[in-house]
Amino acid sequence: ELADKVSRRESMHQFIATMRQQDGLVQEFDENLWGSLVEVVTVNSETNVRFTFRDGTEIAVITS
Image (spheres, rainbow, N blue to C red):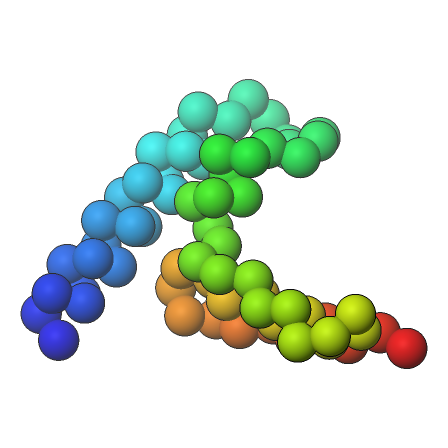
């Protein structure tokens, strides 16, 4: 549990450092920003994708 908390803290520090490097609003895809936010993308099918963020948040995108 302690190792998990330390890992999450480091991830948040990396994310904050990445955000501080941004100049204004993000206008286009930024690979470094994406990598600092997303832990894993799970493709279940052509119409069902789940994004798991580094903070544990999950978002499912289901299209028809």
